View 1: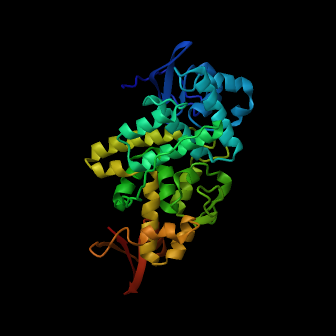
View 2: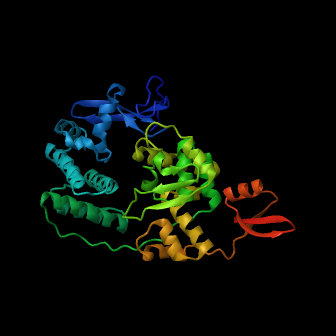
Length: 377
């Protein structure tokens, strides 16, 4: 769909003028014009009601928030969620979301469950009838890995509402992660706008999971010592500190300070904006490998490089925040550097050496009063 620019509308999230029409949303009350902010990825309808819409959209975009505590807001949300479905289904979606929140389910897990259920409905499944769900699974071209996620999500849905079913079994094997060249990761960082560029560089230097980096707060950044503290982990990860480059600290400190968080807005919209940007950049650079890079790819690259440098699997495990070394072992054979070459550089002063270190070079030795550095191609 071609997005038409709207000059008179501003994004209620970041006040950007780069707002575009993003199609119509149809509901029993009629059609509503939707807008998309190209800077922060926030979607909204009537700008005069954007804040109220945002509270309701925390459910439709699967961000569980305080809106669940208000019955009035829940009633409003049921008019938005899964437009076109029966009133009973709408109410069950709201109840399902609220139950997940009360059970302590992580927000990202709840997001995945609701997205999968909506996907099932769009494929013709009736959530009341497990046989229709099994039929969709049997006829779909989804991978076994995704089908296993569908089984898990629908099983959770049935457990909330007292349903039972004989679930199908899909056995999956963990694929070998795609590992790009460093220059390809840097290509996206350099071509991205300020917010995305900062976020991608944070992922590259720390190896954080995408949803660990997104809620980063300014209070977690030690500007003087160039240290970032991570306490809000994913997948029961271990809290940890990261020593980062001064360049990244400057980029983080230069972000607009709209709240106590470095990155604001909808992560769902931000992720979609990244995918669109990635496709445009891959086409522009004529490099289809860029399409295979996602947020988690930066974590795979970080872990692989760290293991190659240290050959210490326990140290890599600690840096990634894994609870078990079995999860980390995949990086011990992810890539073979035997045939790779190096970029070399020299430094005669401390300033030159610091610049090389910030650029990813590692110190090798001294020769004739010159320090030698290298970095893999």
